[in-house]
Length: 203
Image 1 (cartoon, rainbow, N blue to C red):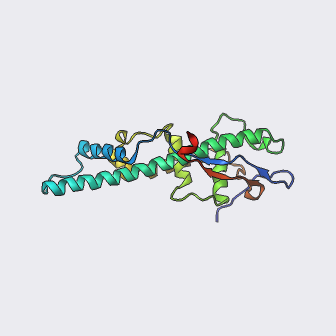
Image 2 (image 1 turned 135 degrees about the horizontal axis):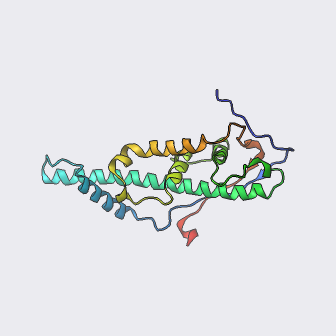
């Protein structure tokens, strides 16, 4: 089993962290627009061989466009979660800096210091519900892209095969830069709420 070493926090008080606010992507394209762009990608990359009748050819192009659109929507959903977690970590840093017992626990390096991956681990330790979302992949995508890239800037190979591995590699490279010291936050000493922000609430 992995040797999980937790930071020792003075006292026995529990500490409240800022709420994790899960938001969407502002001005994200609608489903029909994404499918249209995916269809243009299928056309531009010549992904379907024209070896069947016209009707079957068009149906296969449409089916592939739907698959690409679904993969893209998953990427955007992951990115939005990653962006929300990154912003939450920033808010947690402010909380730590304002608390004398917590202030010494964070290294003063310029953000994002790799030790901040301890906050991502805290989400897992607290069993935060993330339906269909791999949080480490989500953060990896946010570390890779400042903004979610438009679908027509991505290759079909990235959407089908490379997205998960790129996100995993980005997160691991970031997390493994942490110093070889106990860095995990003891889950029994922290509590916070999770809220999903709907598009109506942001308007």
